[in-house]
Image (tube, rainbow, N blue to C red; front, side):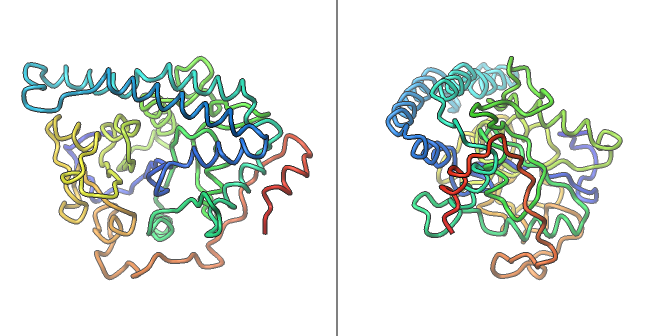
Length: 344
């Protein structure tokens, strides 16, 4: 059962749930997605105004819901009180997130942009020559190749606005992606409905947990016998981290040196968050800077070698390992849109 510490998780096959923005990628990609669409549809001023509004609203919320993790601040709370504060901090921002999506849909920011355009735009933004280049963390491809060889499954779980954008970013890796989607110019939730949002949108950490549990329940035998691993970087990942057997926090710096909400919250709840190289195979929580560190630790899946089985540099998939391009169906014959993102 996810979150259980009573069984030996080191010897069981794994199912890895991966966050996308800031976890697979080095930074959040929503800004790049919005900027690309606003430029294409001549809505730069609207996008900039929306970003300013969103940043102001989230800063105001975070200040009003700030948690004092000091000893004095936690005094008298108890574990239940602390968990309530943490979950409120993560999930009560839902009104802002929902309003943000409604505004974007109202602006028609993504009008006339079919799935192929989103997919190809992501690929273009991955290029070294791109002004808003999106970078994948080191070792991502190597980790996927290893997990595939071990017959372990990987699911990408994200509150990003576009499943096709994500698939374009992680190409040529053909992974199962659970995320919002953009269809006919509007941001929609994944189908079938996975959350309690009226429109089925994935907006919060609570929604990600609902979607993860729904995905787990669709596995053969409800996923019995699997070790569930979650890898994420932010507070929207914390509910899933707490539910899984193992969780890895992806950060650029040691959270003991540069405080991080997730690591601080876990520590306050009585958990240790050490570097992945300093824990054993039955670890509960750990942190890492990239996928190479995770793979080299030998602590993710059964049978992985420590240093010897990992290339010094991130590997390139063999030609036979590269899957066919993801199937993204068009909603319009907008050749001009496709041409605008095919900048070969």
